[in-house]
Length: 359
Image (cartoon, rainbow, N blue to C red; front, side, top):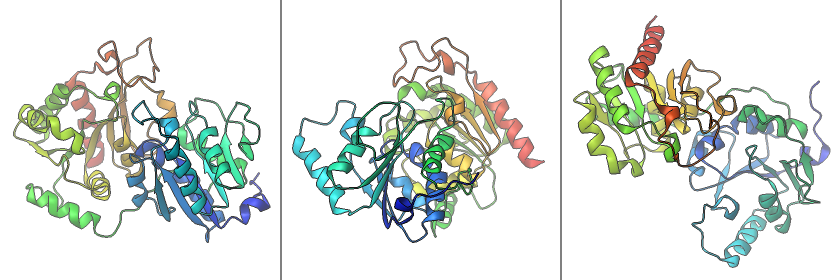
């Protein structure tokens, strides 16, 4: 049965959508935001995001504005004790004059801290998913679904409980004007002309427990260049610059680095242009899914595959079974046994997907 939108939510003119986590987590909210936008086409939608998650908003046509803050309840001990900073946050939220907020979280996170900040800011309607009792912090508390549900479906579960009907469940990003042209120029300067196939390797991830070893990424690059005679493009952010030189030297003459050379929109265009992507479980995996680029994912045992795996594009997920899965750790104390995948197995999966693409 089609959800019925409550009159309170149907009259919202200024909506705040909170997802204070990594860029991939923000991207997985896109189908839920699409459902909201479909029901409220004239609503001004502000995404409340972290510094790491905010930049991906430029790929989401549903978002009108971005509010970027560092949330104390997501902090890993890096923010100093500063109550005034939190009072300033409440004032910033109040300045937005939002009618309502939808707080998206993972199964392990609580919506109550951001919802309470919004309560203090005078936002009357506050929705989130929680099993815990928190009084009136949430005006619209929603019982969460199973923890095994994919994060996209979890996000849709929240908005559907409010009466917003899902129009589609797949990810669909929008590349801004000029992103493909800028990326094309960057590739030509690296010797990769229009139409030339290449494999994209993305060795980075937000935490070390999700990173396939660099020396194995380098071996994958050598194997693929030998087998396909294609360029192997290596992508990454500025923080990957620290190992760029060593990685390129180990990867061999077929490797080309774009580490630190692409904006978020150019990076998305790079993924769209690639023949096959090889990545860890990170934003790249979700963008490849959204852009329908075949991908091989070195999927660490930190998460359950069913919670965040690609759902649309052709994909091969490689992981070794371990008794500690899922650990949800930022660092592995055991030497990453879940990612003990031989480079030739990774290369074979890439060649299989490349062959399917050719056919």
